[in-house]
Amino acid sequence: MIEHGTTERRGEYTDAVAAFVERFAADLIQAGMPRMPSRVFACLMASQEATLSSAELSDRLRISPAAVSGAVRYLDQVHLLSREREPGSRRERYRVRHASWYEAMINRDAILRRWIDTMRAGLDVVGPGTAAADRLAEMTDFIEFLDSQLKGMLDRWHELRAAHATSADRRSGAPGPP
Image 1 (cartoon, helix red, strand yellow):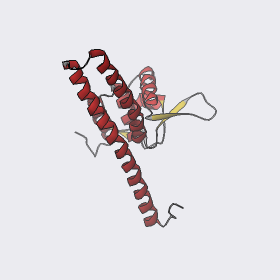
Image 2 (spheres, one colour):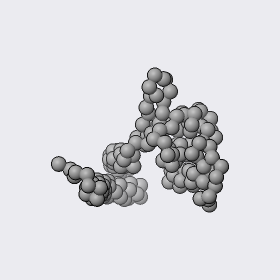
Image 3 (tube, helix red, strand yellow):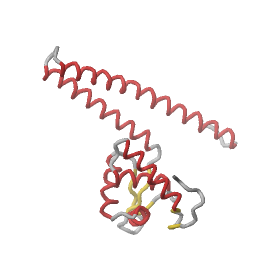
Image 4 (cartoon, rainbow, N blue to C red):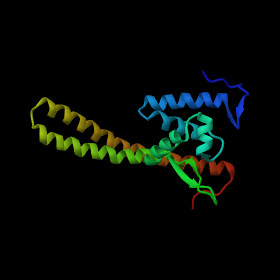
């Protein structure tokens, strides 16, 4: 349970925020993301600061710098964070990428297409009319369906975000898109 009134702080990282981070990380783990990347991603998402260093992540999550390094490497590979150098330093700071979920889904699209190609190759290997061919064909059909639906969903999401930005601009008095 997440408590809202907790006052103990580690910077702006309250016990309530820490509890939320662990709950969010548990949801990500349940969905298949590895444990440490889930915790680091959740911590970055809940951070009031735009970026966090390895030391800050290590301190907040009470994990080793090596665990942070491995988690950051994973999150960078799946395009959920970006690395930035501190000016005049070799230290890096980490930031959740703008539209990271959208980018992750776009990258997932390439994975789905690769799975489709692999399933089709498997159909050739196992031969037609077999139980294995039936399973592979059903999986191929489902992944092709998912791939086709994902493209439309991402397009609709982009349109929705653009419409919300335009509405927010009108409400704030800022000029809209050219």
